[in-house]
Amino acid sequence: MADKDPEVVEEEGKSKLAIFENKAILLGVIVIVQAVVAIGLTQFVIVPKLGVQGADMAETPELEEEAAAMPDMGVLLGLEEIIVTLAGDAKRPRYLRISVNIELKDQLTADVVATRLPQLRDIVIMVLSEKTAAELSQPEGKKGLRDEIFRRINEKMPEGILMNVYFSDLVVQ
Image: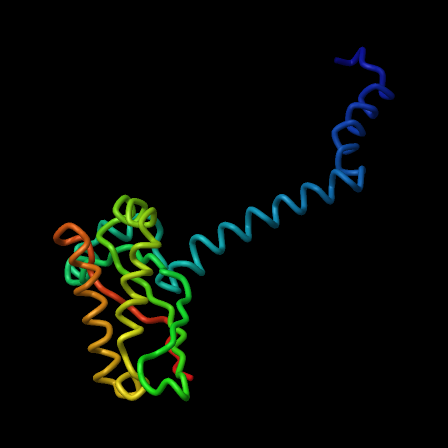
């Protein structure tokens, strides 16, 4: 040990500190340390205070009970925008622009029903063209229209596939 040259010992000490003398490496180390601290603070301080839970949310009994209490929701299939001439005065025609969505049992059923979209649109167009502007101006008329569309489409499908009919747009002109 006494044999070691003092210059060699000095060079070994410099080589250990030389990593921190390079500004790019030092900056990289600082950025990494800051990122780790930020992630740690977020995960262990901020998230618990917000009450946000991770993937184990579904495992709590309260959430399972709430999920069981919610009604079953199906898949919505839009029939695109439909424009028809309403029944009534031939001298002054009235028009209806409507967007109809049907709720189906599951995605597989929705994919199969989507292949029959023209047939469903035809059913809706025939129901709409029988209505007058006066009927559709009342809330009861709109509800009756929805019920009739539901009934007519449901006649063409197997039992239990159609869950509901929704209007996302309805304008009478």
